[in-house]
Image 1: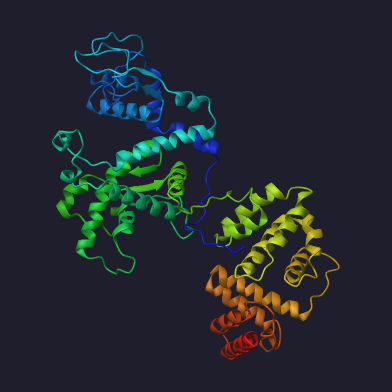
Image 2: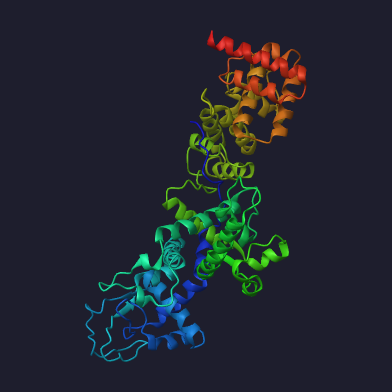
Amino acid sequence: MSAERPSLPPVRLHSEAELARDALAAPLLARAVRLARWAGPGTRVGAGGELAEDQLPAAAEHLGLDADEDGAAYASEAWRLAVDTGLVDVEDPADSEHGADGEAEGGEGAGGPEEGEAEGAVAVGENLALLTGGSPQDVLAIWLDALEAVYADATAPAFDDFADLVNEDGSVDFDALDWDPEAEAEFLDGVLGNLYLLTVSEAGPGRGPLPLPALAASMIVPDDMGEPTDDVLEQVSEAMMRLDDQFRVLEPIGIVEYRPLDEALLTEEGEDGAAPADEEDVTRYGLVKLTPLGLYGVRARMLEAGVDAPAIGDLAEKGADELLAGIGYYPEAAVRAETELWLARHGGGAGAVTAARELLSASRGADAGAPLRRLHCQQALALAGPEAEPAVRAVLDDPELGGLARVWLAERGAADVPAPPESMIFWLAVDTIAAQLDADGDLGELQELVEGLSGQHSGFFDEVWRVDHPGTAEVLEAMGRLHGDKKAAKEARKAAFKARSRRSG
């Protein structure tokens, strides 16, 4: 089975129990839960399910907020989320037993309806009990629903007078608003995708915060552009302002930690403030990082969109063939972590021999991905421990695995390891280099490997071209490019020509 390169490096997620605790602690969801418990049958809502305006001060007070405009806004936001996530159920006023002139009863949040006001019945939603008595998976499923609702808010347009945009039939005139919902969602998806990649990439900043200008530039500035033009810098500045608003909306659901843009900079720079170059100034333009819960949430959205976004542990329950194919292009640390999890699941105790046999069997083959599978098989066996020895000894005479087996036994100081035939030595050398070429490893390390293997055997290039390995010619061509000794490089190129002639003949 040939390995396929994943679209993204694998992410190491926290356990579902830890993530569920983080979800419950997200400020916005926690407020929504408190309001869901506060509400009762007499809680009055409008036609759209929103909390009646005159009940917002009491809701804000219940949340420990000031009963002012800001407190009412936070309470309204939390109530909307409680409705969107099924923490409370709101019956449409047209279907409610309470009419516009009916009496509201019960509930801590009860209050008499205003004359002519449509009123819906409020009841506890099924999901409220799941947040306290359900499994971590239940909690995370509800949190993902909450994330979708907040995501929609983050990509919604900002306007002062919504009434001016409503048509006679009740629809919104998006053309007048100059707002493209798909484009807005695509932009934020791209930003969070870049932030995710930078977080999980070995070459990225890891779990540390990223300056907002750098994140905005990753979406605007072309990769091949040297010095950004004034127009591009202006676009970056506009994107930063846009992201500042969006991250302020996203932070309360726990997806990011965000240090907002210093609003004093807007006064300092005027209308066309460009992203600063000084690191100290950059921090004033906002710092953002994905939380562990954010990594989980962004990955879930990407998976839903069909993006290949692997996580450490995805392969633990799979067979050895899927393990070796799946980790083919993982970073080194991820390969080890995934392999350790697989061995813990498959190779404990008496299962070590069976697991080793499965790994060795899965590494066989003459396809292009086979050398890399054998390399990862060898690394997996190194982690398997001495219990794997019977399975390794069983392949000593195998032309593809015999060399690998001898290396493993020798490294463990095993006795009675038979000397390999010369043909096996050369075959293993070709296979090893082919695996490293496929892995796109460090060029300096690859050059050392090439020079080391060829230097171990006098007349190496006079013999290696005869090796019956599908990658012999390609390996010799690479050795000709990489070898630091000009004479040896020339010999490698000549040997590559002979290998191609032999194969074509």
